[in-house]
Length: 116
Length: 111
Image (cartoon, rainbow over all chains, first blue to last red; front, side, top):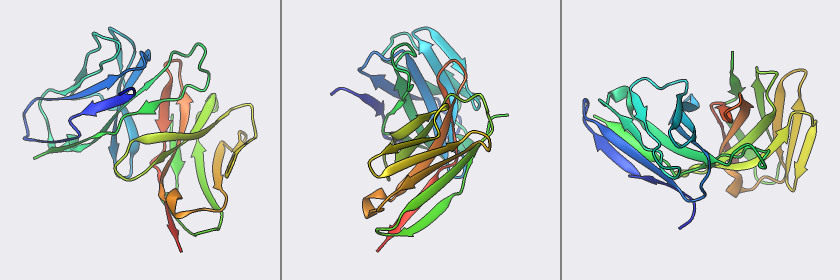
């Protein structure tokens, strides 16, 4: 199906484990983003990518790693999970700024991660 | 710095109008957005406004922008139970299409 998907939708892991959240989009959008959503904070940007092999940190990037070897995939890895990383994680994508001037971001359904 | 603020909760009666308010700090923001999040789902763009506009209307939705006060509002006319959700205000910041989100306003619609 076309769109943006995330997997897994739910994940429980233990402190100290490495966990990878997957994001896949079928639109060939240039931009991709990872956010986390916590009560009282709204969405905070973890990492973003302007194109394959181009990534940059957002405001809450500590403890996270991303890669973008292919345009359609943007995995997010927690290298050593901590309880403070319990959150709902959203991936988003948007078209390049040329020709899409409203810069809409399209969001995936989210991954609920619990670190015990 | 960059900051977007919203009240956290709004309760309205079905059929009334809802007004959700937002303030932002970055005067260079070019686009401002309203996203809707239903329970267990991702965010969906409701509407947006370009910074050189004062108002935008889209069916039951009216967006008002006061650039001088850096204030954005979303009015939903004839609010229905299906409008119950969390509404996020966001501003576009920077050249990489980054969005800065508010904490979200939970809208509860009661009969």
